[in-house]
Length: 338
Image (tube, rainbow, N blue to C red):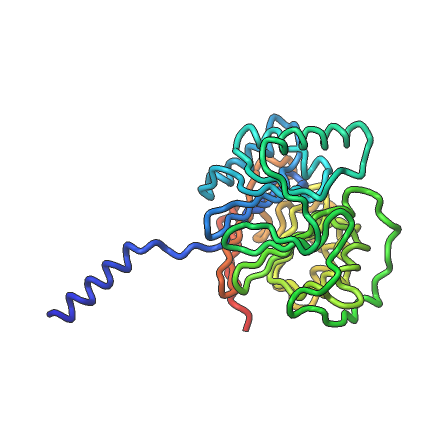
């Protein structure tokens, strides 16, 4: 009887313990821009980019809805990969909906036409209301509970390999370098996000040659579990040498119906060794059936963009993770690497 009571009390005690928290990642539909919300086990949040401006606060509303679902009441760290409208445009509208405590950017914009100036100045106005972190390769963003390492920023990339990386990359010989990119894309902040054994990579819109510098002739990054597809799946990024080097198990593409999702970029990922699945925020019209993942793995199939479904990732310290499609409630779990 006494033994039974001890077991009963132990069971009751276990029932009231809080469930272990994990890293949650939301890939928010901002119609071919980027807005990726990371919620660390500590409860701190990091939002990478804010989608477009205008559209009656469409993207800010969608970010706020995902944040509410995640229990996030403020953005602890807002990381702006670069100063193009589909990444920085939504800052003013979002700042009116959620407090933003820390702003992370690569420095001044390198584009100076009138529209670029307006975007940058609007961002700077709101940045002045919080604290700022200037991103440089090798800098760590202090999000409690996860490690966020800057791999590229303002056109510079890591000089030395990360721990455990540095192996020669035989695929480099296949790459043909592009013409130098003078735009903000090549200035993108790229990050490696680590939670225990789980690793995800987000390079913003970093273009082909800069990715090449990170993995050729030696791979400075190592391998990852989750690849947030560079540049929405544009053929200006995502070279074979880069994708092969990071060797992702799963790729998630934040494309729009008619933005990103190029057939050639999709095929590079599809053909990369070790890839298990590609998930997409939208069905890519230009790709057709041969260059899109099955509908089960697509969050938004309506070209008009009225669905606004997100893809959610729940990552565990052992390296396992689950991907969930809000549209059809389908989820798939990827176990720890053997």
